[in-house]
Every structure is written in structure tokens, then in C-alpha cells.
Image 1 (cartoon, one colour):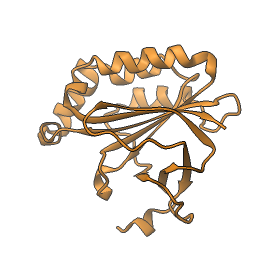
Image 2 (cartoon, helix red, strand yellow; image 1 turned 90 degrees about the vertical axis):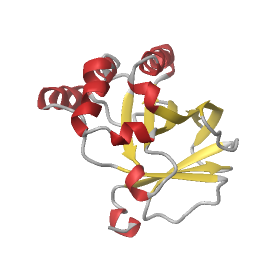
Image 3 (cartoon, one colour; image 1 turned 120 degrees about the vertical axis):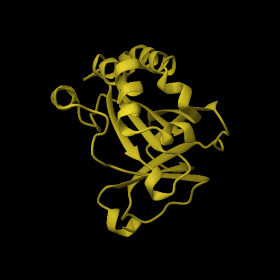
Image 4 (cartoon, one colour; image 1 turned 60 degrees about the vertical axis):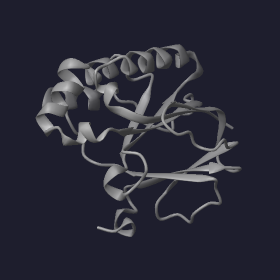
Length: 186
């Protein structure tokens, strides 16, 4: 399936001089950094490309590593993106090691939830912190996932706590590139 066939599920984040999200900070947590930019534009794949220093693409896909009760809880608590009060955002592109991808689905699930409690930890921060995961690995992008979060300023510390918690887990030992981009709606 080509990218043009994914246009209804394809999201692009373009870092440059335009966009509704003003960059507060970009820093590399692990691996090579991305060039510094002033703003980030978010657009659907079928929209025209914007001039940018970098563009990261991902697709909305099925929820993975989740059991039915977890999916129901996530769905019932998840807030929508684009809420007027959610003026803060974070874009965190992540690439995992070849060792991660050589594990079976069951082994990854065991590390993801049974050992790292990724879902259980994330649920604690819903609905104030809305999130969306975009899959990039299968479309040839430099990152495996683009994680997008939106929240109101009063939930900034809760978001920092969530990120700190997840970065201390066994799962994060399999991350070989991670960029943390903090944004505010302009």
C-alpha cells in the first residue's frame, strides 16, 4: 500500500517557520537530534506539503499490545485531540532497537505491560492528557512511532511525571533514538 492510499490515516508533522504549534524546546533524549525549528505544522497526508527543515510522518493504526479490558478502559477515558483548553503539546518520536523488533509479539507485550506497565501508567493520566500514537516503521520513516500528547497548562507537571515514569521502565532500554519536542499553541 502506497502513502497516497493511506492519506486518510497519514499525519505529518512539519518543523519549520509555519504552523499553529510554537516550539518551546527540542532536545535529544537518545540518539541524533533533529534541527531546531520555530514552529510545527500538523497536517493530513492528502494536504499539500509545507516548506520545512524536517517532516515526520506516521499513520493511525490499530491499537497494539492491548488486551480487551485495557482497550475498553483506554477508549472510555481518552479525551479527544484538539480541545480548546489543551494549549500545550509534546511530539516525541521514538525508534526502538533491532533487539526489540526481533522479539515475538508476546515477548514485546510482556515487556510493554507486564514488566513496564505502560498501559496502566498511561491510563492514570487520562483524560487530562490526550494522546495519539502514529506508526511510522512500516512506511519507511526514521522513527518507529510518533507519540503526540495534548494537555492544558495546569497538567504540565502530570505530563512530566508520566514521561519520567515511562523512561525508567524496562521497555525504554529498547529505545535507541528519542527526540522530545515541546510545543504551545500559538
